Image (cartoon, rainbow, N blue to C red):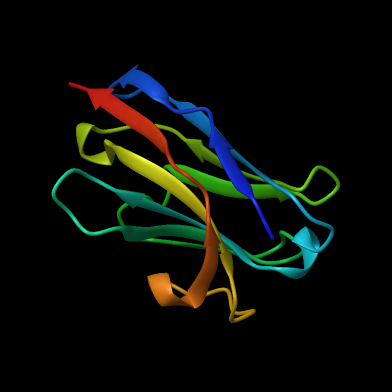
Length: 125
């Protein structure tokens, strides 16, 4: 059983920054592509970013490209999401997830098997 635990969410003003972390249990973390998703109130969960197993390739949703950076530390079994220039429309619960396709461009929810409990990010205007 894999557990993913997100942290780092909070309340920030527009233009500010937050860094989310997702700690994974288990010994196979480095063999999986990892992703971040978010879900705003009343909306469907949407793709944010993915990172390759080694961390040398990343892929972003157009809405966050140039502002968010995904990274990972396989020695710590942790994936990060650095969020800069935050906007009120970034307000959502953010989830990390483990990809099952071994592909960098997995944007559908059904391409992920394990999910964290989520961390709330609120951006005030």
